[in-house]
Length: 267
Ligand code: UDP
Image (cartoon, rainbow, N blue to C red):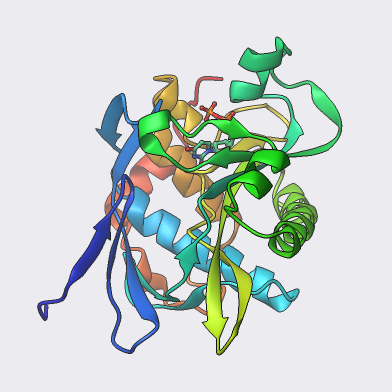
């Protein structure tokens, strides 16, 4: 492999300099963290699965007109992306009460929300990514009023699309996290979807059994996280070489006996 410049290493991904100006290579690791990195571990094969799931989701979102940083997948763990200035917000979209929302407001996990909720968290590990109001975003100029408008309308469209996409494979989209970035064109800039969309940043529950098919398995020590991530990819049709991808992208032959029949997953 040619030597290249590492620009940033995060909890689950590494960014390298891309082959052309304005591009980066995003590498997906198997490392998993939770509770602001207080809990650390690895989920075997997660990087490969998340690379593939995120490629699939970003490609489909592009088809409905959502601008994204994704250019193309390069190999099992890497994708070529557009370089953006990350807006320092984690945009969380919620359909059903879970996680920190339940803790904060004393709600029962699994309670459907009266309507979709968008929350903003200021991206700062040292502060533990605090929840912020739109007033804070405006006050500290983390993004402009127009950018906020674009972000919230894209978040709603993405949620509508993803709810349908997951419902079609018997998965309930509880909540998820998005990140956006700016790209510049002369004096103008626009906001595009960045980062990744995968079971690392979504809560995905089986529609019938309520089984968790996401990172909560790792957060809550439920076990079966590798199988859960693969199950999402399998239901999306990404393990069998469909979706225009070569089947050998996933050499999971050594996992097949464990996949069929699937191991019991604790609720
Ligand atoms: N989330 C994420 N990264 C974070 C925090 C949250 O991807 O740093 C995702 C998380 O997977 C869930 C949603 O955002 O799908 C809402 O998370 P929540 O605020 O409930 O926090 P958590 O319970 O994960 O601490």
